[in-house]
Amino acid sequence: MSIDSHSYQQQALDCLQSTFGYTQFRSHQIEVIEDVMQGADCFVLMPTGGGKSLCYQIPALLREGTAIVVSPLISLMQDQVNALKANGVQAAYYNSTLGLEEANQVLMQLHTGQLDLLYVAPERLLNQDFVQQLQSLPISLFAIDEAHCISQWGHDFRPEYSRIGQLRHVFAQVSFIALTATADAATREDIVHRLALQSPKVHVSGFDRPNIRYTVLEKRQPFKQLVDFLDQRNAAEESGVVYCLSRKRVEEVALQLQQKGYRAQAYHAGLPAEIRHKVHQQFIRDEVAIVVATVAFGMGIDKPNVRFVVHYDLPKNIEGYYQETGRAGRDGLASEALLLYGAQDVVTARHFIEQVANEDQKRIESFKLASMVEFAEAQTCRRSVLLNYFGDPMHHACGNCDVCLNPPVLFDGKVVAQKALSCVYRLQQGFGMSYAIEVLRGADNERIRQLGHQQLSTYGIGKEFSVAEWQSIFRQLIHRGYLMQDIRNYSVLKLTASSGDVLKGKVELQLAKPRVKSTKSAGQGRA
Ligand code: ADP
Ligand code: ZN
Image 1: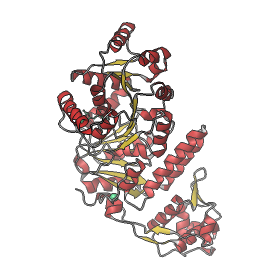
Image 2: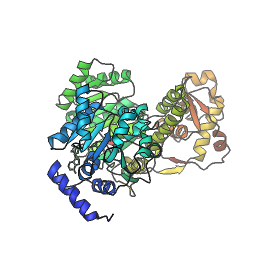
Image 3: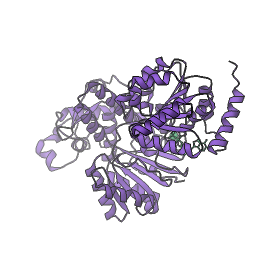
Image 4: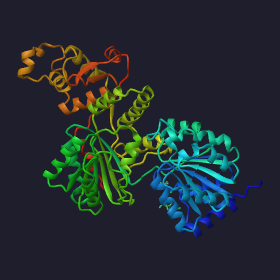
């Protein structure tokens, strides 16, 4: 077969314009289409709204036969088919919502070659009879939408997806295209493996959101930090979302904001449906400025002018974080994503992971949490860390994140770390961070006197740093695994297996200079 890339491109562009009414392709769409047209397997990773559908819809129209699109969500399937029909495309869906007669009607259309695209629910493909029928028909391609559903590494594993992999062998000559919006490297590999894709062409694009400024602040007094951030942004008239991990916190923060005069409302899955609906509507109509929410708030927010997204607590993984921050700035205007990052949140998250019974799941979640922590602690451009995680690497610093705008100053942290760790040791690993800092700074108070801790060799050896600076140092040591907080016991500080190396001076330790006026970077240079 002679492959004429130019003519494929021309055909695809004609189809885009005549059928879909768009003037040009977005980045990567044409490359994917070309690969599919040439019969290759493809793996397409683009964020939601990136334009994945056209990557298989156009080849489906240009190639002989019917394209089979596997899609897990019945409502999306219907929307897609309706939209295609409105553009004059012959498309149908085949899922459990159809009555017997409708189902037969669809099969008839399929068998008589009247369909360019057939959307099917994954469980239909578990039916041998249906698969055999497909084998006797000209199939132009298989598109597996939401392909992460096949992997336990993804966030939405669906057992009915797991047998789709066998199809690749049954339809050896047909190209398969897997599409998803969310996948770290491990999930990607797993999808390719489970779908048995053959030397797939991998297309990753569209993850960068250059208008969003990422900032991570050490969480100290979160509510005050939130209000400072809002004040600096002059946020009274702006739309934004504040994500918290628990319903209780959502309600607290929403109430506190209301008391400060912000037009804020709470949103979480525990509220009655009509309240949730109302808050959603009010937000869309700009009647509510700030929604304080759990991750339940998200599906279906398609509001262009969300100016900021704040994570009040540490998200469980980068996929979630990125999806949530991605709700800011859909209109392309400058927007901000602020993450309040506290060591305690990591401890809590680890604690939850420990409770997970399934060992695989535990391993996966720990890995994802570790990546999240690495992001929060990154001393390099935030955007490069994020894009690299999604396999869409960026090779320059972005100039629009806190690290780029205000690079951390590193210093040799060996001595200071030794002071901190030996203080914890002298306190017999029985006290929390605030108390250890009081001892280091030589505080003169009742409790210290009562416990006789002014006698300790580490008493008053850390006067060169303020309380806030010491907090930052302790947190860095915790994040690096040289100290831990015992969540079951009042967050008492404990040494870890690696603490000895620091105490013996066996490791080089670069710490970031504490940024005490750390709210500065968040509001600075608002574009
Ligand atoms: P995804 O499946 O990646 O979430 P969709 O395929 O649903 O995204 O596309 C998102 C939106 O972008 C849709 O409204 C679609 O019509 C539109 N779109 C896709 N490609 C183009 C294009 N080349 N030009 C203009 N609009 C496009
Ligand atoms: Zn950057």
